[in-house]
Length: 300
Image (cartoon, rainbow, N blue to C red; front, side, top):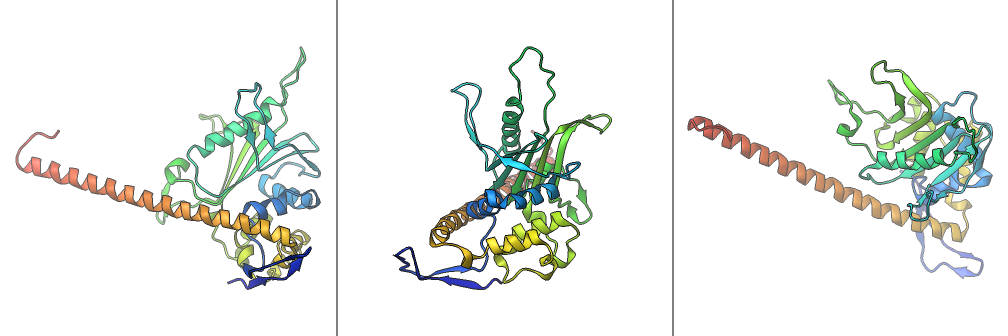
């Protein structure tokens, strides 16, 4: 359990009327926390390290630039989209990073739609264009699980396979070989990652663990102390290092996440109720069918 930090005092002449009880480190799966770590120019090295761990791009990402996250369609009536983060690398690779807290119907379609903007914008207005596109990556950090029937996971003796990261490319259905390697989707399902700190095997797993657990910690784990990237993250995430304006912004973001968690719980309860209702209906149908069989009646 993380130590609670009481925030009070004055900042720029503004008196804090009420004490706020926060954890020592901020929650990185809030909008504020996610943008603080990944979305600021001064912390670009953190985003590069995370993307190199998540994408395994040949040669790695050495440099990247933040791009405008707002994209308008080809004509004014087309729908505009706003990405959480959009950046380009030194090689011209396009990367979207999305953080999604709640399940969303057609979320996979949404990521495909987003990727289409980054493909279209590469079209060159000239007579002879050879259609040589730069790679497009869509990285999704999800604070929920995909439904198993959507993932197509096979059942094992211990139940359904719990896979926490999926890397998707276009594939030839017959040969099972990659047909096109420049369009890549990465889906990271945080709830499926259950490793303990002493069981982490690589940098990517260390990143996932920190994203999940930093707001529950009292100090940086010894296994991360030697890594300058994670040391920087823990310093940035300290509530004690934040200004009053930043704390207020974080509180608003935290309140929003809590509201979303309530919605998530309501959705789970609804799904359970529907599942129970469907099961009850199925049981009734079975009972009716058995009754008709005993009476020698035809099945409907």
